[in-house]
Amino acid sequence: MFYIEKGNIKLSAFQIIILGFLVVIFAGTLLLSVPAATKAGTSADFMDALFTSVSAVCVTGLVVQDTATYWSFFGQSVIAVLIQIGGIGVVTIAVAIVMLMGRKIGLMQRSTLQYAISAPKVGGIVKLIGFILKLTFFVELLGAVLMAPVFIRLFGVKAGVGYAIFHSISAFCNAGFDLMGVVEPRSSFLAFVGKPFINIIVMLLIVIGGIGFITWDDVRTNGIHIKKYRMPCKVILCFTVGFIIVPSLYFYFVEFGKEQWEYLSQGEKVYAAVFQSVAPRTAGFNTVDTSLLSDSGQAITIILMLIGAAPGSTAGGMKITTVAVLLASAISVIRRRDDSQFFGRRIDEHAVKDAAAVLIIYLLLFLTGGIIISELEGLALSACLFETASAIGTVGLSLGITSGLCMASKIILIILMFFGRVGGLTIMFAAVTNKNAGGYRLPKESIVVG
Image 1 (cartoon, one colour):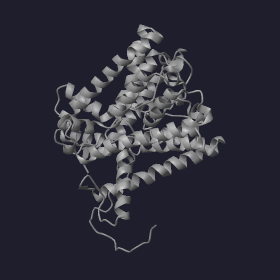
Image 2 (cartoon, rainbow, N blue to C red):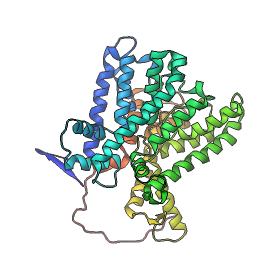
Image 3 (cartoon, one colour):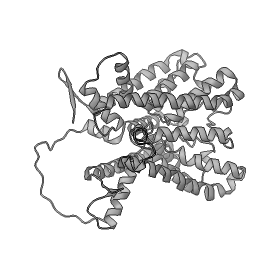
Image 4 (cartoon, rainbow, N blue to C red):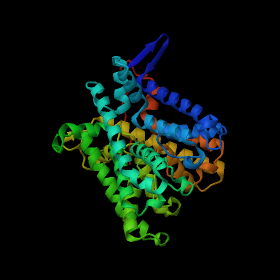
């Protein structure tokens, strides 16, 4: 593990990442607390400012105040900047600023950055940062340009351009914040359920941001020669496609065949089914009322929210590679193989252990948080689990109960959002030191499982 020492302070790369997020969250809270940040011209409640700042930096999208109607242009701009910093990564932004100042990037910054963006190696990390910034700027600009005509037609030139930029940043960073409250409070993209152009653009932005910068670097390097891609990138691409197609089929043929969805046309059901498969991992936009989803529909959505997208992406969640590794491990056990494998490559045993740890940690926090909130609020456990899955998966989808929660419940969601964005292992490694540094091993004894 790489450490940096400053006087008597010794920080690991993981601790630096966490500290960076906390600093940005605190700064965002202060900015959102000033009177100019609200449309009413009064100081926002501290808890509202803190919750919004955490949600923005952790690219979640859960809100206690409607973004469009409560926050002023200044407040919305602060939120957009926080989303951008949280999406690209606090460490990435910090290193980019150092680069723009013409200063050299030291080993400490390179090592910390490697952990922050899940890069396979330290070598070439500076060039990778340049690629990440260029890709982000290009994709968000293109998304804004494509959506601008639609929003200009609806809201006028000035507001339309601003809306296009805000939603392009929010979609690419998988944040889920929207300004559609001017149409109807907390309506997200309900008005666009049958609009193919907006649906497709938003979904593409979500997917592009969600598959990760390392994957796009592989695509840039090897083009259409998929066989040359690194194994993790192949896994990410294959499972991303799978987690879009399979849930889409469920939502179209099963969920949207129920009577509460009869108001949707067949075309709208197609777009809604795909959107409902893409957005929960971990964008948080919705084109249908999530409170109308059946119990099975909510369960599928919760699973998608917990899974999340790719490591080193703008999204949160357990990460799609975690599920893939655990699935490969299960298959190897069933087939009595010694090693888990993908595409002719053996998976490192440490990756399997890490994946199992991440799954257990996320499930424990998701379930514990939901149970506590249910007891505190006297609400149905299923609704509370939906909110905690949305928080720890950094999604932002809600059944409409977030704004009415007590302070204790909001603090629980804040902790889950932070945990989901920074990463379970990052927090665990930052908090726990290696106590087995001496290299000794305890005696081994068998235990029956299964």
